[in-house]
Amino acid sequence: MKFYKPKPRSILSFDVGIKRIGLAYCDPLCITSNILPAVKRVEDNKELKIIRNHIKKFNLTGFIVGLPLDEKGKMTPQAIDCMNYGQLLSNELKLPFSYVNEHSSTWESSNRFGIKKDKSGLIDSFAAKVILEQWIKEGPELEELAGKGQIKY
Image (cartoon, rainbow, N blue to C red; front, side, top):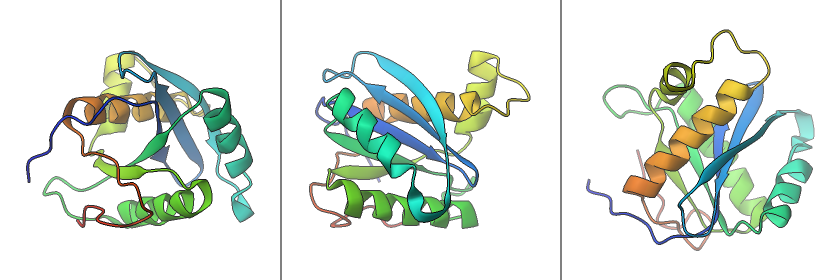
């Protein structure tokens, strides 16, 4: 499947983990990307308040969620959890979104940014930055409606 560079817009990127969610965002022209502090994943999804505040503060118009697929591009248990969280975000935030294959984004961020043995969530946010940079280069375009036409892995 071939993807094409998406149209520029301010995007929030999610690296969803079991304990934390790494966050990064880009400017409306997709020129610069910045990390935000990772948020702790809590019961009842109380982290959504923090996420909504970031969306409002930075005037973000869409989001992407990384899916940690395996080497063959197949779904993993963590990818299923990320997909479910993406659907929750879509239902709650009512913004266009897409999934991005984030295979090895944590490994890449560790090597690229020199982060080792991190428990603060910094590596998660840098992984979200890697996912965002990949999306800026390759897409796919965001979907305007929750779940409609999303890539099926």
